[in-house]
Image: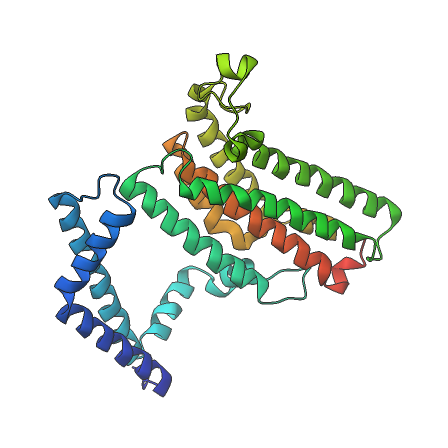
Length: 316
């Protein structure tokens, strides 16, 4: 067994101390989580005894996980565990696949996207499993719909910088056309999410929207809500499958344009979580995950255009 280094021991000791505090104040921590959940997540401000037991079990499992991880750090076994997994899975290749961007000089960007997308996706999906889909026109939907607008604005800013790049006129034309189409899609989704202003200005539906729209809103996607139970899983799973094969199957030549427009592998876990949540049918969680995905995608496009890696950039 390798001698534990100083930093690993410090991390392990801190983890043990946190675990001890959580065990001593376990009841107080459970009460805090319950009160917080009743206030912000429970429609009737009440959590039943079964849910209380589940919360206690989840907290206990997390404390056990922290203790186990801390012991591994103190005994310097984390390196041995990674070595064990690396025997069966090429861990370095997986990490490189997730956090390396061939066309962007900002080396830390894929890691930020990976962490932000995965963490937000995990907690939103956990919310779905625990509390079900958020209420229609609730706080989460209201603010997540703005992400589509922000993403469209980011793409507009990206397009203004395309002329600064040393592309051929044909490549520049295809890039501007592609970004314009994607911008239009994001703007269309935003318009549908806010019912083209109805949720902001509060006007009444009229004509066919009043007569045939399931929710009496001035949008198109609510004319047939029954199809959403099949449409969402189809979109979620097909998107994941298409992206997965484009990510893992090598191609002879992936141009700058291809790498720019294809979502980066750092979004892998977020896309997977989206695909899982899509089986819930017409879920607000899926739409909110999609909003996060769109924002991270747009930001990465902007950063790649702003700071292109020159080797692949000049292949165009």
